[in-house]
Length: 182
Ligand code: AMP
Image (cartoon, rainbow, N blue to C red; front, side):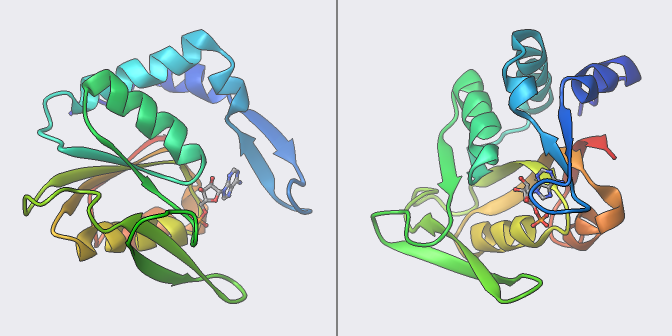
């Protein structure tokens, strides 16, 4: 499947703004609003993802709340595929299934609607988020998809903060495509 060349990666990387010490000291926050605000960069990204996945026999595209929704929904519309939101607890109104995961202090949870992937067993799901750091959210999301009768066939991230080890932890569960490794 298609990957971006060096010039394409640099173009996308340069469209993302870095904010030091946000939301707390020591964190370099990767601000994708500047990519979304740049119509060439946003379309370049969605064109690339569409080319990569158009013949991949994907049945559903799932996005992780909240920045994952933006890319996943744009790609789903482009590929004429259904979009599924993976949400934080108590946001979804119908019957949900949940997956808990550990944070540095305490636990968090992700949820989807029980009927999100339809009734056909073995539906292929592409999972999308903007960024993988420690990988806790993404791992719980893959486990959540695989709890249903669907299967996560690839997890796709715009940015992989490699040193934090998230993609390494996730790799035993699913294939991973990170467009930019930082
Ligand atoms: P994690 O569960 O540690 O992999 O965290 C991933 C989630 O946190 C993603 O949904 C990101 O949007 C967000 N996140 C974590 N670190 C950063 C960062 N340095 N810049 C922007 N977003 C981040």
